[in-house]
Length: 194
Image (cartoon, rainbow, N blue to C red; front, side, top):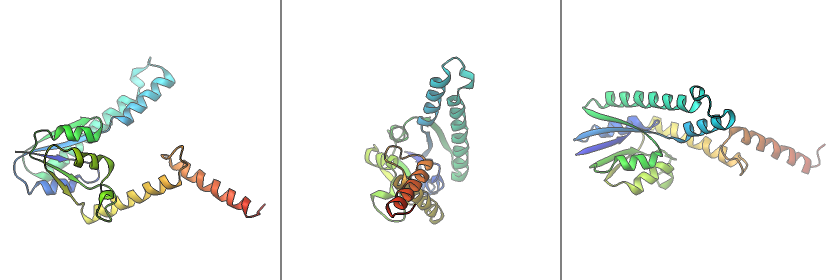
């Protein structure tokens, strides 16, 4: 009986604590998203060409992601305190987790969305995909009270950035400030100020 424990950056402690109550062979899984290193590599290649692979920031980001994954997996194994296998993957997070759960008897993961209330918004997009497509039973864990507050703050600021940003670029914090100042100046002009 293999129990796969998804080690995500913000909620891994709660998943490991829940795994301690299970029995079987444990697989601690961390998945790094391939989008950021890929974007850095593409930007470098587009700006400077392919002639300087030693200065490519994509490979540096891959190394940083691998180091981060190994540190998280070591900390999770130490917290679990039981014999376990560790696996770090790179790719689309939700697809890699579903692939790793093939043949497993249980997949343990934690809610990572708006955890202030129950419901579908308490799951992030990747977690929702994994819950919907998992080939085995899933143990969905609520984060502890402290992590719940941290996730709620993170979710709140993501909502603020999305609400403030212009529709063309809903990802950068700078666009939020620009949009806010644009709104103020247009309000000032409409109200008859000089």
